[in-house]
Image 1 (cartoon, rainbow, N blue to C red):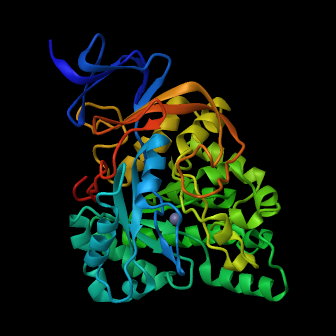
Image 2: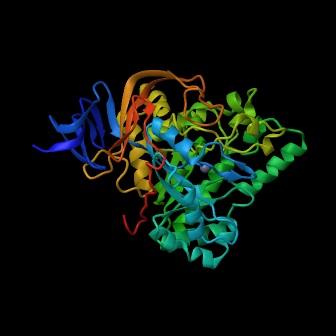
Length: 458
Ligand SMILES: [Zn+2]
């Protein structure tokens, strides 16, 4: 009888086809077998727990340089937080500067992450305004796909990044031709800048004006336009951070028209609202773009997540400290909120325990679908041959979320005070235990850059 390196026994496996009470065996870095009575050199008891694939967070911003600031979590601290929350792969970004080649931007960003990361990672390549208008830069796209960087981030907002429709089309066509995919920040940027300027000039500087100057319907029209441009260019497109009912409706309608489009939401859109958070005393903390919306939007998001209207859940983790967030006007606040650690538990508690989604759908949204859409061929499912990234999740563990107990570096969390039932107990990365009984036991550099394939390789 074969003796496997590790056998995780007695748990309830969450498999692509449903639940199974069985043992999961790993050999070396990979999942080797699923069965009963399997023997291992090491046995991990998962009695009373769910056993699921490591979470895949396809949208995080670690040590992001922005306007003289750097986002609060380093590659080290952010990925330790991810690991402790049951996420074993993250996808961050490489942002080329004017005049810098895409290959150089990738090498520079990898040099910041390699040797630091506690979990595996990939990088989306940003195509900023100055690159989208430069044919030589777009000619580099196929080489990036070959280097395992098959997803390209485009923006329809932010003065220095936003692409007009022609630039969007040209960039999408270049990505499509190389077999890559586009991930998109979709808002009607130039008009939002105008509305924001008007509000500030009229003395409306409170955080709630962040939402009032970014109307949901303008988010939806941007998605509508981008979907049609992507279709024209033959390019698969993934819409980042969808927070409003209007955005969901556009994605569903575009898919019904035969467009290759997916969408994600994030825990903060599902659990927080503009009125309560942006309108509260610490409003500036909750500024992110697109903004938090209303309770009715949350219902629409949950319905879409349950019924395939939306495809996956990321965090858009982009933390800043309380003092960095404390600015005179909402227009000066660096955008983004932390969230990399509690994603699995929040979605388990508020999604599964509250009856919005099933257990298999939870795993699909947080692991399987992001892996598939982002070209991570061996991640996101408990299947023989896949990477041995495994979470043993205790569905009875009760926790109240607090910045003091999270491993995230920021001195606050938007989810402080929320009580959840269910938390990861033990986490394996490619066969190695990196979190044991909620304690991080890995080392910097355990994680690796993962080459992600485009359509040609898939
Ligand atoms: Zn983002």
